Image (cartoon, rainbow, N blue to C red; front, side, top):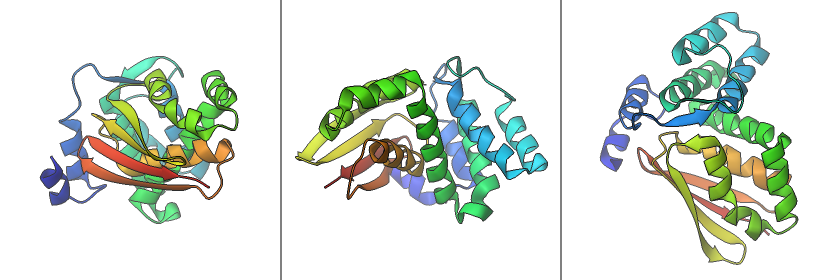
Length: 202
């Protein structure tokens, strides 16, 4: 699918439609992903942008741990990123910020606090817990971690159509919250529903 990905601009309406076609029927995601995204538009105070985002997802409010269609979340993430593009500078920056805000909300909850508590100062343990943490929120795709050094790993997310900047933001927020120093996170799109991330720290 990489050639199809290269043929359309990241963040374009056509690219959104391409990603939507790859979502398996029945894939779901927890409600807090929706709530975090909509909250950022509410904070902008742009009622028209908020209306467009709500219409795109079809969901005005969600219960945090209920499951909702993955297709609705993808539409919402794109519309929110378009709404925030002027203030953030680009679609990619908006998507990355959404990932950071969502991770911050996750870490404030019981599952996120437990994940940080169990990892302590051991960032390798934290990285190894990422696939399990992923499964608490997503019933769409899966993740895996491969170690390339004592303080460097490669995280792969398979079968998830969300663009790579979103999870760059997630990993930045999670590892900064855990006290990582000299943190570097670099993501890229392997295919339309495949992303990979190089994480390292000092």
